[in-house]
Amino acid sequence: MARGLLVLGLAAAVPVLLPAAPAAAHNSLTGSDPKNGARVATAPKRIELRFLASPAPATTKITVTGPDNVPAAGGAPTFAANRVSVPFTPGAAGLYIVAYRIGSADGHPVSGEVRFTLTTGTAAAPPSTTAAPTTAAPGTPTASPTTSAASPAPAADEADDDGGTGWLWAIGAAVVLVALGGGLLLRRRSARG
Image 1 (cartoon, rainbow, N blue to C red):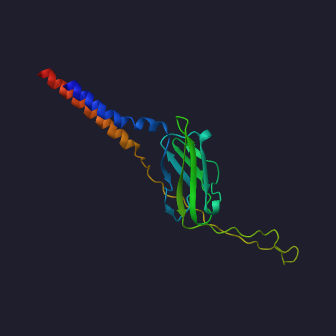
Image 2: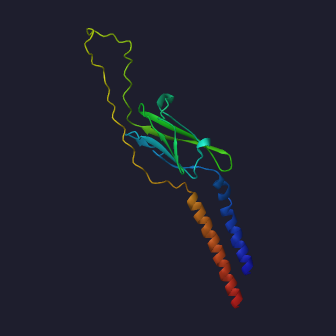
């Protein structure tokens, strides 16, 4: 009877653990700064994506576009363990889309996007001054129009988001431990009797 209960307990644990095994081979997004769906008033200096596993630079592609599909990435992405940062060049207020495509350990690419809204944009670029006529006499210095844009402040760092996979592993481990503990308890009881 004890062996039957042990086998039953292990059989109950197997379905909990099996769904996690194939998913572990796929990399996935676990968080971002700014968060997906966020509304931010101050433009961040960089956009950070956090993944379940470290993405390979050779197989990672990240694009950032703003309103009217204007590119908003300010340079190449940088990699640090499971984090990828992209310099951000804010433009007009509106929706910004960070699209990513990364490789997984099993070779299948994973893609997705993070969307956030910048509620305050930068000033429009001044019109070109190359064709503007000057009325000053030759040799007289002329004042050129200047624009001062406020330097965007970095967004506050947020805590890592848990993508839910930790809970799945914890539940699976708990089921296995309960099954093993129950089997050992039954084995001891049968040995006494």
